[in-house]
Image (cartoon, rainbow, N blue to C red; front, side):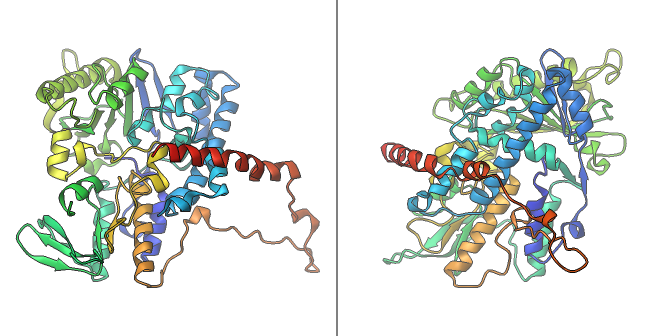
Length: 501
């Protein structure tokens, strides 16, 4: 299950470890990326195949829609590249570390003060495409009506770089990292729950190991917790989504690897999830069929299916809710929508119901996520990513008062998502090595952000030709740096932050 996005991040991760991705698992590109279903039985197919994408865009937006889509993608590329360089691969341990004019310019450049859905209206005239290109913010824990416009970088990453699938399942990635760890002398302890993190009682306040539930103590030079950060603070240190897994008795021809259903009451459904901490009566949901791209994910002639239904996390307002009733309603709604909206003629035999095809089923709810995986309030996405829960405003990778205590994961800097957490692991490792005064043995950037050397074009005599010289018009250079505008806005940002304390 899951989207394997930003493959360059994983290539760099393995490269830093002296390994290659293709040595450990094989990647297959999903085509199409996914199909978005609407309640009126219309669909939008999103693909990295540009001729197909052009036809799909023009089907809803007309001939000039393609030019607007390319502008949307160009902006997404800027958001993506700036975010990787300035957010994913940089640590901001103190408030002073963000008081830089270049960060103010960066914020303007990636439109952090605009909203995702509002900005989509600048590029897409149809509400259908506005929804198709903004719904994914829910996987960052935000409504597209509240998420910064910066996050259209997700659509750029999906469409420009593609959505991939590791043959054998997404678990091939952590299994590979586990094998590499053991290969380099690391130990992995299984079924060894941690009771508490050991912290010295002296003035130094240093983490020096962990105590397991069985009473064993493991002492260490540093402690890094990759459990949910809020859970770690609440349970180890001194002081959401519901999913369904289905086994289908035969293949369903029309389904692709990824499909999304978007509710008719689009904006209202997000308000119910993120403001009301509940589930809409008609929720949006995501369907993954891994066996469509990887036949080994299910027995021959059958399908495996995973359904994710976004729902509010456990909250004081909903603890008394009848969760069995909510789960039952979600299941029935998904079954009904699959049968009447997503499945195509010929998928079901005469008189057959979709539920008849389900051979086996397992479910997770916010309660099971909290109980089994120690996820705070049952939220699998960690903390949200609004403007004041990123960079320095997000929990830091090093504990503010306990020395030698570090964190990595969705709720700490830089944020949620497998490739983003991979970047966070690199930041944490670099922080640990710097604190231990150990030389960092890898490149501190990702491949896409490393300087590109332009080879000079020379004539036979060895002289550089004038055709290869590059110069930028002065007004473009000024627009790129915008130092005057940065100077004017910088005090406003600082004042806003101080008032918000």
